[in-house]
Image (cartoon, rainbow, N blue to C red; front, side, top):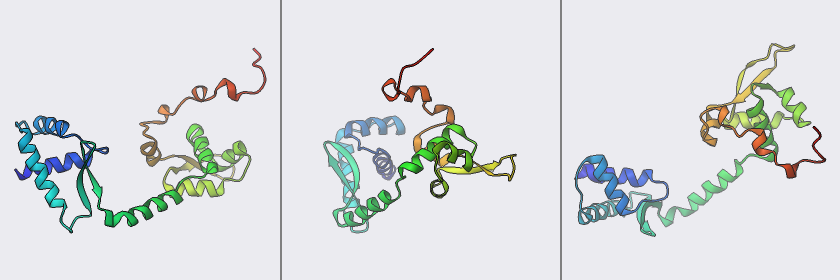
Length: 186
């Protein structure tokens, strides 16, 4: 029985937007190869809710719109609010996003090449991207002075849900006709 409750807890925790009791029951039956009645499932969920009602837990098991999910208890909302404020401060600026896009499409690339494309100094943007782990130093160029080469990192791939740089949108897919000036001459 404890194993079933732990599995229920894990499934609810892993479902980012909540899960219905019907889906939860089906998943449990498939995963554990057992039959669970609706009444038994309700009892297990009741025990799990009682566990999280304790002051020892910052989370509560709630049902919103018939979807079970873990939410923080109201007394911790101020701390969660500060987390959101902190995350907002860590967002990338427009210049950092432009720099990241250039590095993603032209990697490996030197800082000078990025600056030539953007037309402005990119020291701060590159340092910010390195600090966030979105880009990495990929080696040194064979040109004069041996400048550092930059490329996207594994964190970049995870953040944008890519398995490789080949999954990046092709520039022809992004450029729209309404974004062009003048007529196209063949």
